[in-house]
Length: 136
Image 1 (cartoon, rainbow, N blue to C red):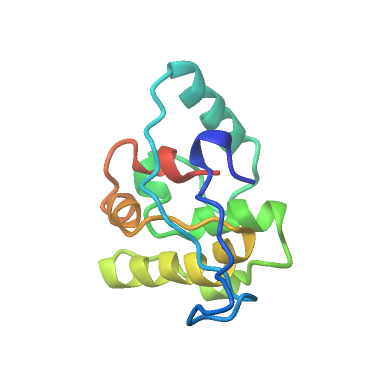
Image 2: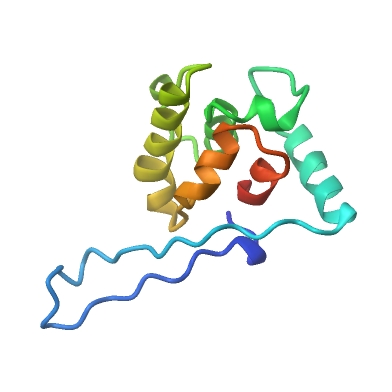
């Protein structure tokens, strides 16, 4: 699911004297690196175009800002993990953050992938290049 350059640090199990049980590893979350090469960006756009989405893609930064299309992308590959009724189209920062936090906590965590809070803020604000950094 994740590309090599977007890999999240592997969770480490705690030793016997640790506070958390060994069965619940924590995920380290790092800010996603930018895609520099035009070929990488074009390959990413072509990949997204192959996935059937509920809304047409006009401006990828704005289209993915509310998290709904990202949830659809994950749902395309892992239909049992994503409950699409949890995600509604949004214009408000609060609802967008709710969608993304729901994805991060309920879906991406199960896949061993977490999006850094700063990346979420950038995606929600539709900052240029933000969604390209976090797409799988």
